[in-house]
Image (cartoon, rainbow, N blue to C red; front, top):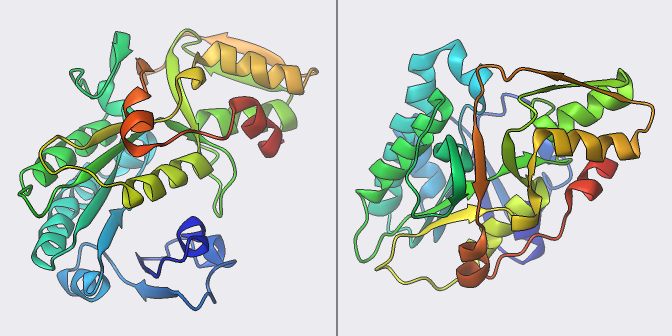
Length: 284
């Protein structure tokens, strides 16, 4: 939101505010921000929020494997059923650009370097709802309505409501407060991306002129930030030298993927400006 407002966009936010308004307190009074408190599972709330909008950026959902497994029916309703409804209402309202937040976790566990044409292999319910949402939104495509899918890498860094269930933030916090980091599945590779860069990719997608003939799927991250969980822990240890790394066998999260981010750079003009080292320093 703050990046869009800085670039002069008028923004309408639809949110349930489960976590209160604190995360957006710095922009809450901005004259170009309109806040709609509501639930995107309710058609009335969606119609009010979407009316008059040129673009819709759908970021809402239940995120991460532990949260998704609490109530699987609710997860499907929020992450999949609602995504389809949002797409249908956006399309019927004449929205010109629809951007959907997907995830590189749709690739699951694979050894080769993966691009947007690679086969998907979602392991978790979260990843399954993401790829299923891509499919139902893709089915709504026509010459006037063509959803853009941004498959984000593993996010890190500080934001309005920083998440400490994300591996880079979590390990850094543990190294700093407990002086130990427990790494599960040390050889698993993840593609990392800073939350500010993830937001910037949305701005790039919004600004770009894209043809409606191709499939608009983009991995979001940088080739330089594909690394194993053990390499990540070593980077953290460099900045917190009195911390210890403990390795354990991989838990049920067996994701392992090395992702190519060339396409977003070539077509969207997207480049990251943060490094993992900078992000670790920020969290410290």
